[in-house]
Every structure is written in C-alpha cells, then in structure tokens.
Amino acid sequence: MNKILQVALGVIAALGGFVDIGELVFNSQAGAVFGYQTLWAVPVGVVGMVVFAELSGRVAIVTHKANFDLVKERYPRWLSSVTLVAGLLVCLITLSAELGGLGLVLHYVLGWNEGFFTLVGLVLLVASSLLLPFQAIERVYGYLGLGLVVYIVAAVHHGPAWHAIGAGFVPSGGSAQYWYFVVALVAAGMMPYEIYFYSSGGIEEGWTEADLGTNRANAIFGYPLGGVVAVALTVVAAQQLLPLQLTPQNLGTTLMQALHELGPFAFWAAVVGAFFAIGGATIDSAFSCAYNLAQHQGWPWGKKNGWRHSKRWTATLLGAFGVGYAVVQTRVDPVSLTEYAVIASAVAMPLSFWPVVRVSQDRELMGRHVSGVVTRPLAWVFFAVVCTVAVAGPVLMVLTHMGELT
Amino acid sequence: MNTQSLYGDAAEGARLAGLIARGQTTGVFARAHAQELEDDVTQVEQNVADQSIPGAERIQQLADQLGSALGDLATHPDDGPAASHAETALTELAAKLAKLGS
Image 1: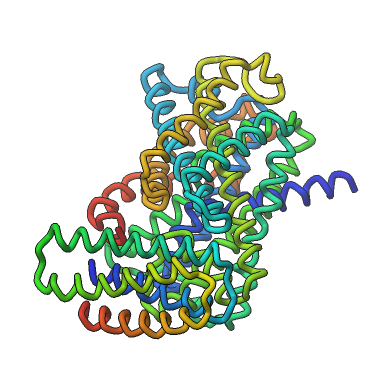
Image 2: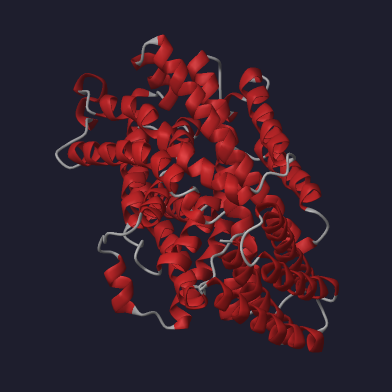
C-alpha cells in the first residue's frame, strides 16, 4: 500500500511539474494562431520526455551515475566541456525566463512592480531550496502546480469540437511559422533541465533497484497526464483567441482565459498553478546548473550531503539564482526569453542525452536492466527526433523571426 | 505587423474591459494587465515612428486612442460603468485596426 501511495504521489508531482512557462507561452500561442493543428506536437514531446526520463532514471538507479557523471566519463575532455557550457547556458536562460515569469504572476495578483516581485519570488525559491527536504520541494511545487488542471476544465466547459481536436493529432503540413511552433512545442515538452533534475533527483532520493517500478510509473503516467494540461492550454486558446485572431503576447492573456471561461475561482486556481509550476521549474533549473557543474568537476553534490558538505554545489546553486535574477533585472521580456530558452534547449539536447542513451544499452553496466526490445528502438527514434529539433529549431527561428510574433 | 499587434491589444483590452464591467476580475489584475497592454501600444507607436511606414499617421492616431482607453482602464480598474464604455470603444478600435491591417 505504501508503495502504491509513493507511486501515486510521484505521478501527481510529475503531472503538476510537467508544465512550465514554455508550455504556458507556446501552447497558448500555437492554439491562438493555428487552432488545433499543432496538437500532435505535444504527444511527440511528451513521449520523448517519458522515454528519456525513464531511461535516465533507470541508468541513475543501476549505475549510481547522473547525467553529467556520464557526460564526463563518456566524452573527451573538450566535448564534455562544450556539453557542460551548453547545459549551463540553457539552464541559466531557462531559469531567467521562469524567474521573470514568476515576478509577472505575482505582479498580476499583488500589484507593485515586477522587479520587486521577482526579488520576492527569488527569496521564496532560495528559502525553499535551502530549507525544505528534497522530496518536499518536488512534491509541494508539483502538487500546487495542479491548479493548472483548471485549463482542462475550461476546455471541456467551453464545449470542445472533438472531431477537430482529434484531427489536430494527425500531423499536417504548413508554413515555416507552423513548423517553428511544432519544433518549439516538441522542445518545450522535453526541456533538458527536466532530465538533468530527474536523473540527479533519483540519486538524491536514494532510489535503489527496488524503485525501478516507481521510476517507470512516474515517467509513463505522470508526464502524459501533464501533457493533457499542455493540450488543454492549446485547446482553450483555440476556442477563445483564434476566433478573435488574437495572439497572446504575455502571461496575463493566458491567465485571463481561465477567468473568461469559468470565473474568478478558476482564475485563482490558474494563478496558483502557474506560480507553483513556474516556481518548481525555476528551482529545477537552478538545481540542474549546480548538479551539472558539480558532477562534471567531481565535487560532492546534492541536498543528501547537507550544504556544509557540498559547499561548492551549494555556492553554484545560489550563484545560478543570482545570475538568473541579474538577467531579469536587465528588463528583458520573460516571454521572449522563454522562446530563446526553448530553442537553445533543443540545441543542447543531443549532446546531453547521447551518453545516457549509450549507457542504457550497455549490458556490462546495466546488467539485466539494459534497454530491451521496446526501449532501445524508442530511445533511438527519439534521439533522432531530438537531433532533428536541434537543427530545425535555430534555422526556423531565424527564418520566421521567432514565429513573427514579436 | 504593427497594426496586427495593436489589433491584439485592442481586442484583449475589450475582453478585459468586459470582465471589469461584469465585476469578474480583481482590480489589481485589471490594472496590471491594462498597463501591460498600454506598454505594448507605446512600444508599437515607437516602432511606427521609427520606421516611417505608409499610413503611419492613421496608425499613430488609432494607437493614441487605444493607449488612452487602456490607460483609463489601468487608472480606474474597479469602475464598472466606465469599463463598459471602454469595452465598446476598444471593440470599435479593434474593428478599425482589423480593417486597416487587411
């Protein structure tokens, strides 16, 4: 019973933690511009996330090595350094975008200026990171992120055009702008910081081979349920904004859709959900910066050791928060920054995921937990998807001037 | 692109004004969001001034009216009757901008 509860809690945390500012921005914009036509990109990103999360969790459990332990071990020095720099940059851009988004959410409901609330958000997140146990951070932010489920309710309440929604899950052709959104939606579904955090988190939580089932269940059930929220964001935008030909340029428009459809209670649920989903993602990306650098440099790392015994890891964690805050203070628009973060993530993914894919298929290291007839081809298929996205993302970003929305 | 952005701000402003008129939103959110839309309009006005594009004068004129209506919403985010008038004005502005952009 305890095991079932543990799995259920992990699934709920993964559900609440799947959506971040990337989904809130891109899924709403995609629905407003293309209606249901980009819906098929969401399951592609979700299944990719399931595959890479399960795989990196399994590798971490069996080998006791997290993502950047493997990068360091498997790559020549120059390539591991390039991968580290790419991973750190992506996590820092993501962290800045999320932190800016957090300031905006607080500004929408408490007034004053965003700069002040970005600082409030930062203090809250640093305190959570230092004072809460690892599992509590993951679960509190994951559970309260469930407020975003209100978008599923809003989509159903509006009276969904089921046939058109179903047709949206079949890939269709379109303009360069359409493909830019498809690539961004796939990339937003499997941001690298989520994988870095997931694999290191397995080691933080002391997972053993007895937890392989929990790892699989969290990945297989949690992320797809989170994907339903991402789909709902697109559907709600298609229902409300497409008929007006109104493209959301800020988070306020996304939050207002819940208010418009279901009233004030839904608005507050969306605000709480967005705050904790974005806050959780900010913490995950800050932790990922610290995990990546510490694992690459061979420093002691993680909350499991206590901050006194992982001083350089803790200093990197705090430094990452500081850099993110400094970037936000340049008054860069968090929504534009999110678009850069998602495309930059696409570029960093192949380098980061390659060693995990290789190790998961190494029978000597993985023993009887080596990837089998299902997971092995899936890993290769989604590695090919990641490589395609890595090439297509920046090209389409330039060709379409960031989807021609800014 | 400029008229499209202004159209979006007008249409979103009209939706917001409608919610204020029906008492469905908080004053803090209404103020913050109206201010954000007004900032977008100011940015577009600046772009139009810098680019010297055809029809710039008409775009500037509509942008002024739009900025003013959104500014009123931001200043009086709890005033239902005023928001109702603003909803009508913003809807008309959105229609004019859509026509200008087509």
